View 1 (cartoon, rainbow, N blue to C red):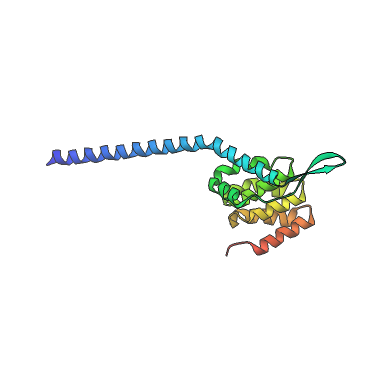
View 2: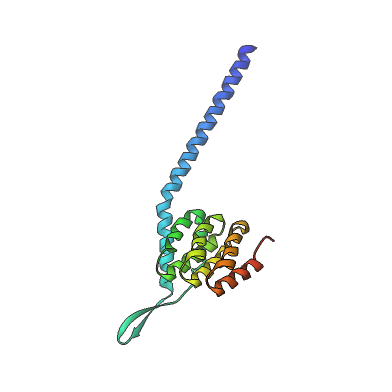
Length: 183
């Protein structure tokens, strides 16, 4: 009887060890797969950004020269849905565009970060909302922060409402605080 119990325990421990090893292997494979996907995700996000910006471009003739006129055209629903599907993996890629001098890139990156929402977008949008040299972009960043969890976004909105150098940004932050919050 004692040998039978020992055999059951040995079988149980062996089975448990096997399950743990399989779980660790699957976890490692998933991480490798996720890491391998990052260059593809980066390429797709960059392409979406490029196509969105180019979608707002028009070539016009000015004094006999071709000039590219740009307007803000929002990304397509399909593009937004694709970026949202990448979720947190797209955030560091989009955050790179927030440091660009091109306002088109910065605006579209903020718009896509807002579409992703969640806590991962707070840090990059916070940087723009509180530190960008353009009051307009600070205002945009505050608006897109409303897609983040209240407890993370509210302190940023409150700081902008009380400390931003631009009256319009302070007012917008106050409006957002009044219309945004736990429901």
